[in-house]
Image (tube, rainbow, N blue to C red; front, side, top):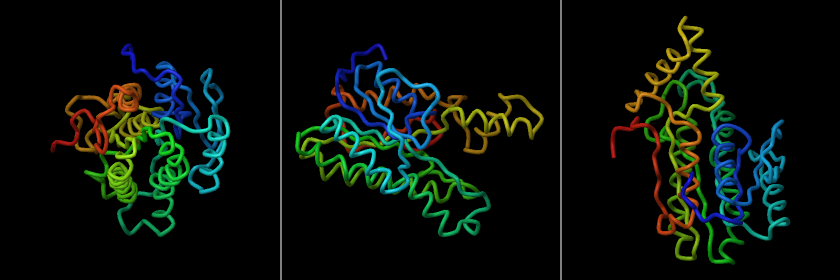
Length: 260
């Protein structure tokens, strides 16, 4: 972003920051002048200069504790926490295909990392009287796909509700909490999905994208969002320019959700 976000030297932690949207968020924050630490189970082959990479499995309480302890030891506190980590690994087939293990896996990927990391890092924010927490939710919480995303959508709905409650609790103490709900983003994983569907349907990549867009009810904009577009929104919300914004969720979905 060419706009000065006044993020110079702010300490930012990003989860899931080595690929897809998370990598775009990391890059955006670095370009805005922030000091950034991020985590992933597998470190990337190519790293961003100046970024601290901490290997950790955030689907476990031990992994979250490792990340939090490493950041607090290095910096003494944090100014921004952005929880991008998420996804869905459950099978299709509707409610009957989902076991207890599938449900717990979705919660441990899409809800609990944020809850645990906030619990570990919020005390330092409250002590300094300032900070920003942003949780990446999903429009799936409003329009789940019964065939494939029931557990994922429910976990993201829980994340949004948790964000709202946390905002009400800590905003009077100087910490802002928000959530961002993207629609379909054209990440590396999304490209692979569209390519696979295209091959199955005997069409090209653009045809594969149309299959995906149709499956989610359409995108009036005519295309998925670029990771950088979502990252720019997140970086703005994390910045002092958004100092009076808290407790809200921002959708960025090309108009997929037709209601207010």
